[in-house]
Image 1: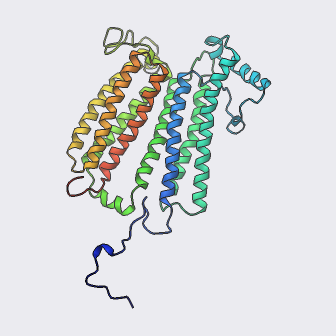
Image 2: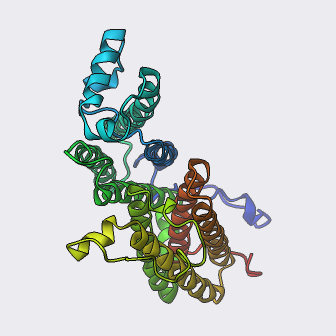
Image 3: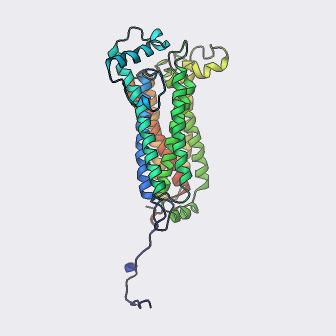
Length: 378
């Protein structure tokens, strides 16, 4: 028989039932907090991977390893003879013969370690995903509805490894000094897709299922649509930035706001067939990246103005952070061009794109699932 409650019992003394974060509300049904922590580790590693990949490209190290050995390639050369064998393979490709002929063994080792580190980091990410996923699966700690999402992340990671080799193999063909720019763009774009899904899942797992369902009722449909377009626009700019990196177009015209004294670069359609110019002409590719950057900034201001109408202070702050970062990223882009894309500035610009991407996604998430705030709007 339940005990009788005192009429003087304070309401605040009543035990509260709180919902677990991450779309799961009943005890024993998954461990969303642990999975969120695991995804945060993957999140950080993917950011580092993007940075290391950018530095590998900026140091022209991407073709130093001419074979794809997902398992045995984890071990670097362990003897002088093994180093000579690796160097001989590199000396057989066009990049060495046409660009780096006469390179010393010590110079080769420098670019080799960049590429090896990039590939090794990819293996580490894959291992951490596999160990984490199968542990959570065996321990039945994955919340309902999340198994497919986590498998999807792992599948994208495996696809990224295959695309990485598809990219590298394009630079080993006769007459090629670098990897094909469109393959580089595909590789980098997929990295941002993976990063974006991990970020979204981290945001989602930080909220209870009840909270998410309640928040969705307060969703700002107009801002959700506008920020969705902003995501697509930003992704296009990321692709164009990858094309710029793929052909070193950032070093072609170090003047701003004009290009070689004009609005358009000289002879932007000099290659035949004409479609090649959109991927291979340094002037036209840089021009497209510039124009898309201006357009993205203008549209970003439009979305920010739209977000100012939100009644939710957390949502407004998210878009404030987005616009401030977008402005900083545009300034970094201009500085990168003016100084002919030195690796120290170029890598900061690339990491700026990572931060901006995460903030745009965060704004979109809060537009759809606004956080609870007090009556004062705080």
